[in-house]
Length: 604
Picture 1 (cartoon, rainbow, N blue to C red):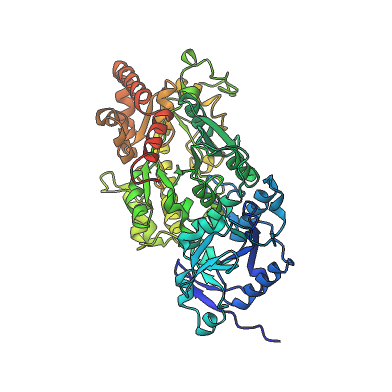
Picture 2: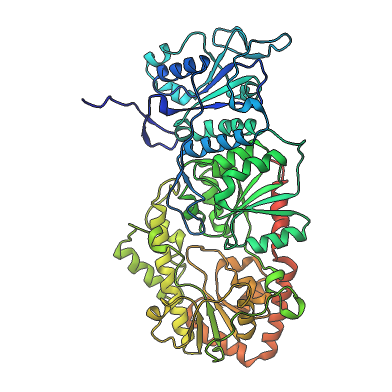
């Protein structure tokens, strides 16, 4: 038997999608806090075959329909994200949150359909239908909302199949409807097709299902999705406590369960996600938080386009999008980001201040297992980010492009570096999202970044180099004689920075104007940092940056000799840098900037 022909539609992102049909294409959700008289049904998206949803409504009104849930699986992630953070399937996540909200609600009405008649004094006026008459819970039991872009491409037969007594409501009426409607039926594909239209509404549905257990007010709790191994969370937590806030770390895998319960108890100051931790690809958690009035700040400490390439809907445009590299801001705004903030990395006095002024600094678990002193120059870092091969699977760059990039790396007076922006221009990329082609540009930049790092380290070998990192460095640096294994970041690394004469930083070309933690941690720990001349240094005083930076690997020997031959200059620079970091570049300073941006006019 031939398969029935299925309708196709062009979604908001310009891609063609095949429309699902049948009863499994819909979710049915009971509204636990609706008034007793509210036996109406709200349909959000009719789908391609109105007869399908009509049958579901008829079964629901006859008391034979129940709420369905599905299991969730995962999709590939980007550097800094765990598999549990990015969920596949809009409906799976939405239905799961609906189930959790239902089971966490104290209301006995949460699990039972309502079939009571309207009572005296409870006759809420619902939106006016297409025929101009006012509908009430008694006279109009079925209300629907449809996206104009969807309805516009449906055939005449689709419009004719909509029952005449069903009333179409405006999206602005949703909040009122949710107080007087017993059940909501949702076309599952709606939010994937037109996420800007449906996403905020589905968030309001979920928010309406969370029954507050106590009177709510804005708390000073800050939600931090992540685990004990999550990037930057210890530094952010310590800074939040210093500023009088209560950090609440929630493992991403537990967020589905805990988020509805947290929101039932309080309204946190914000959710701060580092590199998309805890935020799903379709944006349901963001929409729920948005509907509950909880701001979401997304701090991209890696290349933001790499992070965003894992997302399928444009909800990220409505977050407070923070980037450590200001050079990304123009393109992010051009792609629709409404609130973009330059928020560089910073230092944590709690973790990297010298032992004599920081009693919390734990004893070193490792200093030098070989018993050999550090060489003149110390480099700490991996040869590539975790799961690099998987992230760049299938990415290739032309040999001519790579040759041109190497010429720039070799030239001491090159006008620019073959960084991420260079590669996007070289490949003619103007649309950086949602296309995955942006990863190919990243692959080119990362390949050049490794070559560049190798050239700095090869030059450093002549002065005496210790590398603390992964074993792959042996293959990249045949000249290296002192390779040591990775060390504990908080317990041991500050001591190594203090012991080293000079600590070398080489910024990745994935962040054309970025900084690394070494730009802050080394000075805070009492060490001395020398670095490539990344444009990101412009957040520091120009004189200080000029004294410790070099434009090309060939300038490294002269810089080292100058600092070694002038101990007083070295000591003065170290003191000035540590004062600069302490007075203007700690994580508390970054939180001040972040909270000021949340309070800025134009944000709600």
